Amino acid sequence: MKKRSKEEILYKTVKEDNILPITSICKLNCIFCSHKNNPPQVETYSFGHLDKALIKNMIEFLNPEKPVFIGESASKIIEGEPFVYPEIYQILEYLRQRWPEIEIKITTSASFLELERLEYLKNLEPLELNISLNGPAPEERVFLMNDSRPNNVFKIIPELKRMEFNFSASIVSMHHLKGFDYLKRSFDFLEKYQPRTLRVFMAGFSNYADSEIISATDDYQQLNQFINSIKNEYSYPILVEPQLLNDFKAEINDIIKDSPAKVDLQPGDIIKKINQNTVESRVDAFYQIKTASNPEIIFKRDQKTKKIILKKKKNEDSGLIMSYDLSRKEKKSLEAYAAESSKNQNGITVILASEAGYNLIFSLIKKYLIDNKNLKLLKVKNCFFGASIIAAGLLTNSDLISSLNLIEEKIKKIILPEIIYDYYGNDLLGNHYSQLEEKFRAEVVLI
Image (cartoon, rainbow, N blue to C red):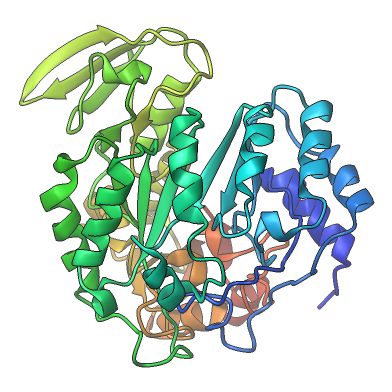
């Protein structure tokens, strides 16, 4: 396997995802941290504090038409805490000078963000902070995050409200250890200061985590039920992630306060057409609206069809919050492969889905599975990571092979979620998807 240079990995991350890596140093020790619970074979990259000259050069490769993400873990690079980087403010100033209109999104624990620097950050708008709160009081931050400055975030958030500084918040739910009361107290605290949104993540643990902190299989349902029972008490949207979806209805989860969509739309509305174009999925609806100017929207509410003109500029955020399913292109491709399978000769088509995504994919292709011996849909268990991990992005070739070995027929085509693999086609253990092609002598398609 070819060894990639640090620079190649970093530049690829910038170009592909508009993520700007700055540091892999965090200075916290969260009990839910995925990096410390990773099996030793997992391929990740930790680069410490990156050289300022290198970061400035990477900034040249950003797409200024899209938001730039700092501190967001979405690749094999271990993302640290941006505000422990010694020259973070110089980097942000250079970024703003180079791309005057780019939207900057920074994920931070806020433990090392200095109160007196907020005015400086405010002047760099458009800039949004995503605050990883994780608890309602300093003592919870100490327990859950080993935070050495647990009071700081509770000074920062009120000041953000006073300054009318856009921020969102997130919580990794540890309700199986702390109960639901600590979550409600976290929600109550945020209600005073009105984040744009709050994302509540279901903690995922591998077999390598301490058995005392691993969540049970029914904890997700309990979390979802709890939040659905109380979210209407709050003025900001509360979202559970991941969402386990069963269909492609373009249903609105929630709407950001004071946004264009807040005028005429409401949670539960199902979008049917945009500018007379049919809607294929939640993702399709979201991006059709995002890229349109004053779109005409036809939607269903309480079994009645309604029509509005949503007053917004092209590429302006509508304020709609919708779960992530598949894009129009992805959905059409998957459906086409399923339909095509009935014509197969000398082999079958196998579609593999994660435990989290299985019901969604089944809803799309179930009609093609009827009386079609040439098509199979497999639910793949995350055996390598184990425990409570159910997401496609954490599947490995070994998991896929274990499922495919159960197929007795000759396999002609294997359809896989593209998210399993990195930019180079390697899974989290560094194994290329061509391993499947060679083992099963089948064509592999990534969607």
